[in-house]
Image (cartoon, rainbow over all chains, first blue to last red; front, side, top):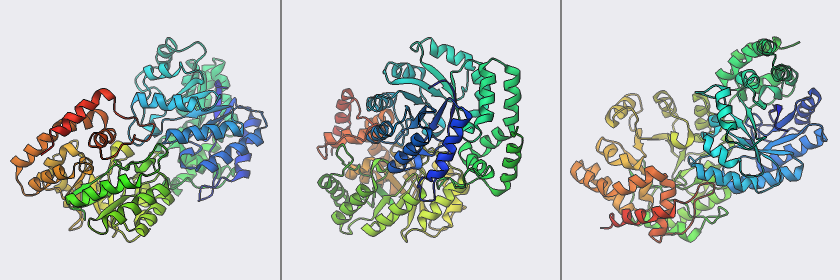
Length: 294
Length: 294
């Protein structure tokens, strides 16, 4: 479940944060049909942080029903409070999720011991395998290699979703981690514009924003890179370049809403205070998508 | 209301995040009796980010009833979603708050336009004056001078609570801001260990963590600095030094829980994932408090 392409769909909601069941079901079905290796529901792209507990439970129920076991479903259960994250993990498990994704959401900046205790509590709340969600851009918490190694000793903790490395190569970062992690502990990466390089360097998984809406194109890139075909992976990655530029400029969370509307997959706004990208940028979104049609 | 010493009490709760009414009432009464210039309920020190909307409303009701108009009450209404922050502002106004404090809580990092629209929406939700809560340490958002100036044009936005300056002196930072802000727009500072210097440099207010539990000592420092008595302000500040060291090492939010227990004001733990400070550090808390008894 924690290898290959994991696609993170947005969660279409109305202005009050109520999930649109038909739109979500369509998105999830599209991912399963395309053949992605797993679906990451209620990740950062899925806006989990902005949704209430009942809506998060509903989203999982809709996805489970739509998938009917076709594709493994990983569900984000991050919350500011440990008891809330544990409750969300219980909800997801009961609704039929196959795995959990946990980010150390913070207000008071957290210590490593606090994050360890938080993860141990949530991992202990169900039998499901859990992904460490290392996403400093949103949580402002960076996992040290020591903490990842410490967490990897907890049986339910199965893998880590890493941000793009800042100071090291993928190879160096993964080699250093793998030397200390249990056999079979998968290392995946998020940060779409680095995914081709991550996979070519031996990463186990690409946790992909763009695959949430463009699963076929992201899969083609993934399969080329997994096969070690660097030329083809780079060629496919290049077609994404205008989109990566938009992701970096406006944040992928905002751009995905514009992509969904352009593709007529769903029409919704991000959760305020987050605003849609400016109208002037919409032609660039259309052009970027145009360049990705087969 | 936005001048002098604003004291930020912790919010005593049980492990489920339910406010302890007697303990909170005792704390608030103690602050009013000591004569602080305002009370900052449900600030970062008050753990607002970890409390449910009903508990936040209850906390305001308890404080309003206890104060019976003796001391202006400023209430933190920060929330991840704009509609939630607006609802919290309405709750606080209805319960009898005198002012609001708003931090740009974020998950997806916010743009300046998003924060502006968020503040405009919340400021428009009530008639109460509002404090811009510039607290990059918890929100990860830093207000530019341009944005503060832009926000100061909104009638309800009355003042800004600044973090300690990183690259500038207090004088230089305040002079640059005051040259662009409306007449009478107050500038206050948080960051307890810099408060003596901030006030001596002409800051309008000290938004104080420590005053939430040690109001008399914080008031003495405030009054000395307001009177321009640098020698006395520095002498009083020096007595706080062991506490500032603990604040910097463990975070003031955590240390305040240990202080409250040591002073027998209330006995509660911070909200998990935040953990109490280690037992080994408790003698240092006791010693720091000992040095502050008159």
